Amino acid sequence: MKDIKKILCAVDLSEHSKQVAEYAATLAEKLQASVLVVYTAPSLSQYVGFHVPPNTIENFVGEIVTGAEQSMQSFVAEHFKGLDAKGQVLIGYAAEEILNRATEEQVDMIIMGTHGRKGIDRILFGSVAEKVVKNARIPVLTIRPTA
Image 1 (cartoon, rainbow, N blue to C red):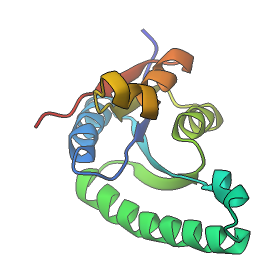
Image 2: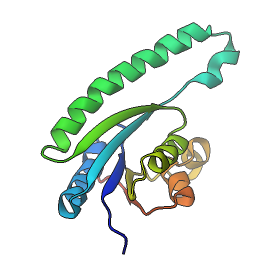
Image 3: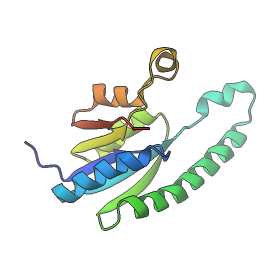
Image 4: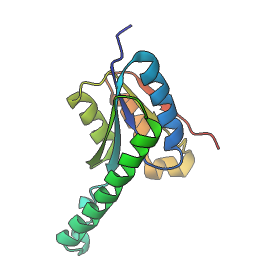
């Protein structure tokens, strides 16, 4: 088995992210691995054609990113205390950004949550976790949150 020295932990900063972080922190501690915690903010570029001024969209995305960066700092400090961990906020389509960052950072494993959507919700929203699992070249551990 390949050594796992760097873990990418993808979170959405919701309540369920705590459970994902718990798994990532436990594995990182046991394996003496570093952790890169990422959150992906939507780019909203698909709304440019809806008569919304591009600068308004850019300002809105900027506010989302600023808020997410503050939340990320708190999240990493709270859930990865004593570990070699850092947080990053990405912008774009979550699955693509997670896979790209995993490649760029040469991580050995991805840990992320799944919402377990079914039926029409899955058709409409898709599954970021499913796309990551299908396209990743490294192991992916998915955590389905409990109630």
